[in-house]
Length: 93
Image (cartoon, rainbow, N blue to C red; front, side, top):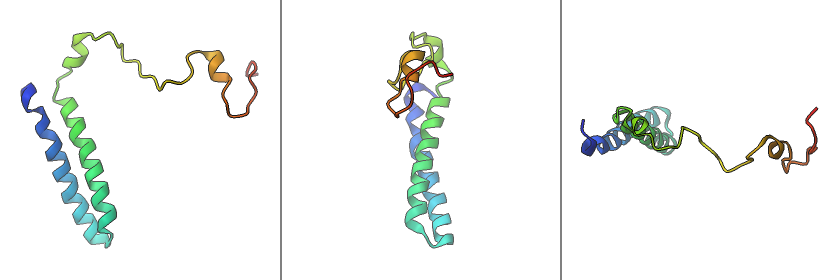
């Protein structure tokens, strides 16, 4: 599929999730739980399929990110050992 049609995977994933969620929810008599789980899992699968349909083009572009994912936490080893959890802020021995 081309770059313009990769958004088609999200409704496919959500529709599949709704179908599976309704089936399992009806079988277990807990429709609300399984419908919401089906939508969430289907959305995740749809987004994953959208990323896979890209064919790795984002990795070929060389955007400079280098694949580093940061949560905004500690930036060095000394910062990581000085957490605010009440532990010691020493050498870690």
